[in-house]
Each structure stands twice: as structure tokens, then as C-alpha cells.
Length: 304
Image (tube, rainbow, N blue to C red; front, side, top):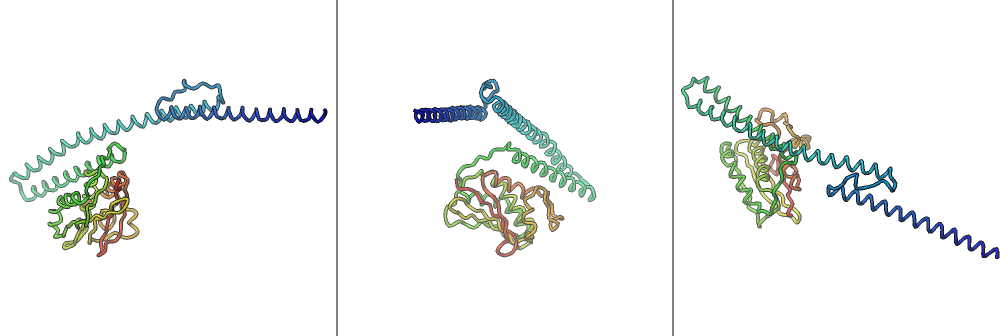
């Protein structure tokens, strides 16, 4: 009789413990379901504190709800600020383009007048400074668009070789003036990748401009493209002055200018833009020494 009582008590304790475990697991499941629902609502933008009562673990839910509400407000603020920046950049671009264009026009008209040798020299200096200012403004606007995410890349599968040819053609005159051989090595097979043609030309143009600028007369600048399984590589190789090893990690910094090229025109924004453009398209840039001296910049762009 005593043994039966002990067994019944043991069964009762076991059932109570099992019931407690089941109740706890049910409570835990309900909490996770509620938290999951709160996260879903936050993700799709429908979250509101009014949607969730405080009947279950009120303190945790209240704090979690407060956090999600704050996050939602922050996301809205960021979105609003981005729109304001977009409008500001657009206004800045529009407001500066007209006066700069007019200044250049007036300068050209002055150059047609009968001026003293000294006066003509001043006009040429003014024209040069206006062009420099226009370049600075354009670079600033491009950088701002990329950094703030205002600009969206329009990527599509494109054959690479024609893009290299078109970019090289735009710099043909600049290269000829310095007696630099500018060539595009033909690929053995058709090379395609997924990229934004306009902005990729911008990146290549910045690299070509630097290559021609820092390559002595009689030098050579070469563009080539190679295809790999997951990506394509575009090389811009020159036989110029090269880049010291200790500076290779710095040249992509915004406004970085090496002491070796301090006398050359430039503001140190070109290579920074190159990296922003390429990384924004899911690629990356590498720098290495050229095979015959100089420097090789390699752009890696994904195939899909």
C-alpha cells in the first residue's frame, strides 16, 4: 500500500513537471512568435506600438517595441535626408553650370578683342582658372552622388572591348600631344561583363588621364581585358613614373596627392572616384608595378 502511494506521488510529480515544461515551452513559443511578428512588421514598414499589447512579458515587449519604433523613425529620417541631399546636389549642379558656362563664354569673347600681350596673358589665366573651377565642381557633384547613394548604377551585360576603344579614342589627342602611344590590345575572344557603361567609362577615363599625365614623352599606355570564370579584369598599364610601394595603399584616398606629382595639375579625386565606381558595381581595384616600369591599374568587374 505504501509502495503504491509512493508511485502515485512520483507520477504526480512527474506529470506536474511535464506540465510545467510544456507550459513554459508554449509560453516561450508564443513570445518568439510575437517578437517575430514585431520584426516582420518593422521590416515591411507596418510596425506600430498600438498593434502589440503588453500581456506577455510586458517589459521585454515594451523595450523591444521602443527599439523598433526608434529604428523605424531613424530609417524615415535617413530616407528624408537622402532626398534633401539629392535635391541639394541637383540644385547645386544646375545653379553652378550656367554662371561657369557664361564666364567661359565671356572669356572667349575677350580673347577675340585687341589686347596687349599682358592683357591676353591675364585672360588665358582667367580661362584656365574657370576651367579648373568647373572641373572641381563636376568632381564634387559626382563624388557626392556616389557617396550618398543618390546615383543608382544601371548595370547590364556589355561587351568590354568596344568600351575600351571608345574610351581610348576620347584620349587619343591628349596622348598624341605628348607623343605617347595609346593602344587597346585586342582580346582573343569576346569578353563581356555586367556593368554600368557610362560610369565605367568615367573610371577608365580617370585612369587614362593619369597614365598619360604621368608618362614621359615617347612612353606607352595600354588597355586590355581578360576574362575569368567569375569576373573580367581590365588593365590600364603605363610606362610612367610609377608609384612607390608605401603610397600604393594611399592613392585611392580622397584628395590624396603624392609629393612626386605636386607640381602637376589635379586635386586627388580621380582615383577615389575610380574605386567608388568599381566597388559600387560589386568589383574592386588593384594596383601593381608595370611590366616595363610604370604602373598597372586593374579593374575587376563581375560577370553577372
